[in-house]
Image (cartoon, rainbow over all chains, first blue to last red; front, side):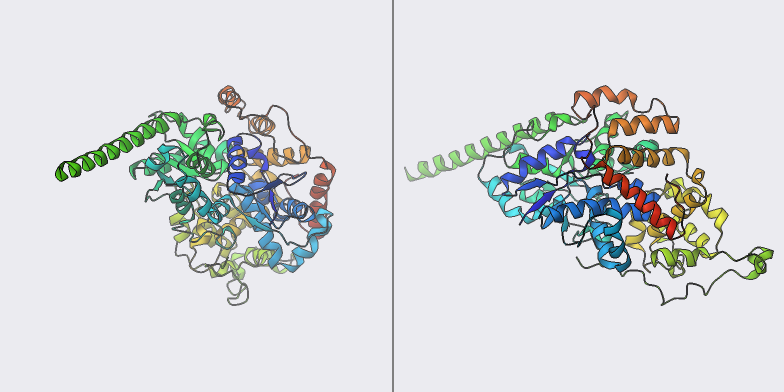
Length: 313
Length: 219
């Protein structure tokens, strides 16, 4: 199966660590990603807030390119790009008039034959490979000690008919990937709440309020970090919350970064140094804890052996 | 995947059954050609029947922006049902919607408030582009301007254009050095090769919409 890679604009800019970690993790899982040649912006929320047709036409050009370049599926790690591409595929499949109009508007043949998947779906399909990589023992020990809040936000669960999550209120797909990594997902309340998304620039005060509630709930639930799969969620929870005056921000990891750490890739390969809330202290603490625990377990086992041998003598 | 939410369909509930009575509309209704009701217009554009809404308020209960709105989602639905065009197009509720879709996912009767609000916003922009709050309109225009220019969204250009258009001249300027030092800012835009093709999409959409009789406000 040939998978076309649609990085989208954010992954070429402020969320380049999402791009770096996706490109690092995919080959380790046996996935070959080929970037769609000459892809253009999906239009995000701005296009469809202004014109419904434009909001469908801009993603359709990219789906048409993927089709022409022989892909069976497109993966878009950015949740907003995924949502626009998947919504476009869905709407064209369910609206004969739209299906007829689109090839004329994008001036390309278009059969709507390419599947659109998000990064959670792609990683979940390779969960067995992740488990194999983890049990090979080369992974960062810290991950086994890590308690994380899986944050889906909006676009990985809604609209229900296009997002492809297992449940729109209590999804578990991200938790399944987190468990495969050996980390522990916490139970919390804000997994599918909105972070303020595209208002990051135009209404920063709202985004600060929404992000604060999400981070506070994750902390209360005992999470050491939040895991996301969306550049806007990351910007709003990492960049925006790093500025909060009480200093109570939490590290925010991309799901691909967690998988990379679990499989033994270095933090630098995965772009962790690019975050605003420093992840190093957390990973160092957990690493120390993991080694202490391992030493304790070893000592206990040795003591047990000694006691048993003593009993024999 | 299978949808757990039935799609809104027209026909099962009359979209015109609750049209405003003559007393509610302009006295000259019998003289001037009557404009289609908002309910009918939204049904025609989207297939969503706003009359399905029975005002349970679940949309507003789950809306992350409801606390900042004077007209919350269920009130927007009600204004559409009562065809209160002026109240509606001037209300902050339609502009503060984040399109998070929580309302539509939870609506017990498939009235799809998110799609309705999205459509009302488009109707408002067609009528008068200045109806959108300056910051939000500035963001959308800057974003689309970027795509027309290079085919992709270039964040530095977007921020600069947005700050000029919105009047928030120095917003996030202090963050620029820390973004740069983290390698998060590209200083030069990367253009798609076939930029002419992307620009023609904008033109073709505009032409198609002119033909369909709607005028767009995003240019």
